[in-house]
Image (cartoon, rainbow, N blue to C red):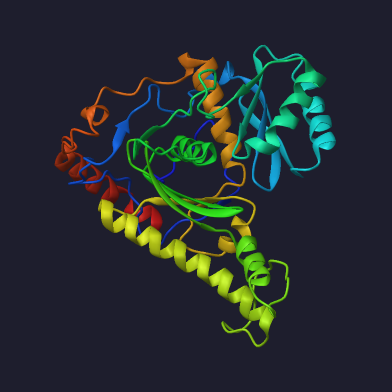
Length: 355
């Protein structure tokens, strides 16, 4: 049996597998005494065939730091997505309007919006409300009326991670049902960890490739402005632009490799690795570290949040585990030795599928 069984979700865009088994795992001997751990109910799960038939239809609006991405979901399936520069407000409103009209005959439909850039979202939200006259549900912005992201967290109680990171984590866990690392290659590069029970633990944030190139130009007298491309040929650059590209390209890949190794070492197993974001294919399209590249991962997370909030019966309730009572108590996670034995056996059963 393949480690990733088919699910009632959109197909992943690029599929690669390791040459060694990548079993699911749970961490062992991990103490959470400095963090606040919560397990939201329900945690996102793949929809069954029955629930897929009653799935919600959506227009999802994802506002990033650089671009705005739109997704059209018909009966739970992502039909298409399109990107705009964030300044193209009229074009964005026009496309949202066209997508919304395609949902006229759908039994259950909604407009959902997620943003990491509130300043640039205000005008867009106002224009959409005036144009459509419909309620636009906000996801994960911390306000009392916003839809929560359906994933548990184990974080410093004083921190609020970006909704995009949580949405990516929720979507990745829903797709894989396994511990995983999510690498988002956008304006910034984030490398986040979700454990085997679907709990988000945080991760690392670094400047993205284009930000690094821009910073080198702005911070020096002689380094030029250059476009981001994939370096080819020798590992060293024979001119300044080539040297800049190699520094950024290999620097990000090395950063991600090292973080993945540290996460795996810390938690006692090697998780699946999912990449997303506008530069993910350029940076990791040929990298054996990455199991899947999912360009629309954040949109899929928005769909998961909408299903959990508006169609809660389509999600299984999360079992009542002692994990949910952790945090300030600093207790050990329960039954981990038994779980580790089961996962080790599962890995042995699946090892042949990765050879």
